[in-house]
Amino acid sequence: MGGVAMYNVFGRQVGAHWLSIATLSATAAIPFLMGGGKKDGAKKTPPINASSKDEESFIQEFLQQIEQEDKANKISGKEAH
Image 1: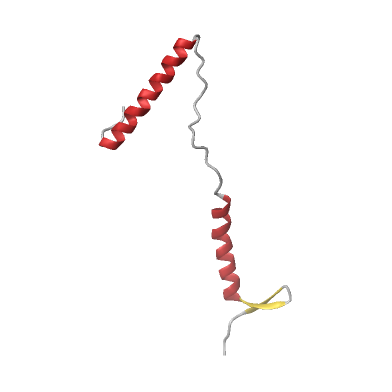
Image 2: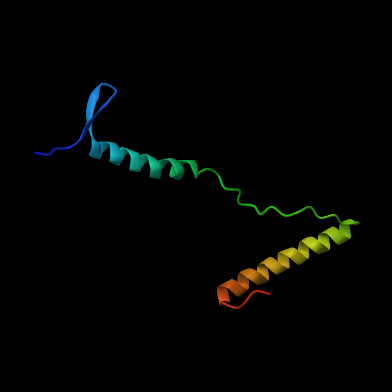
C-alpha cells in the first residue's frame, strides 16, 4: 500500500504535502510582504531652473493649470492633450 512520503525535518517526520504547502505559502508570502511600505504620494518633478522668480511662478502656475485640466478631462472622459 502506498502512503504519504515522509521526510525528516529537524528530527521530526513531515509529510510531503506539508512541505509543498509550506513552500508555496512562502513563495507567495515573501514577495507580498517585501513589496509593501510607504509610497511617496507627491510626484517628483525635475527642478525648475528659472532665471527669475516671475518665470518660476509662471511655470508652476502653468503646470497646476495643466494638472487641473487633465483631472477634469479624466472625469468627463475626454482625451488628454
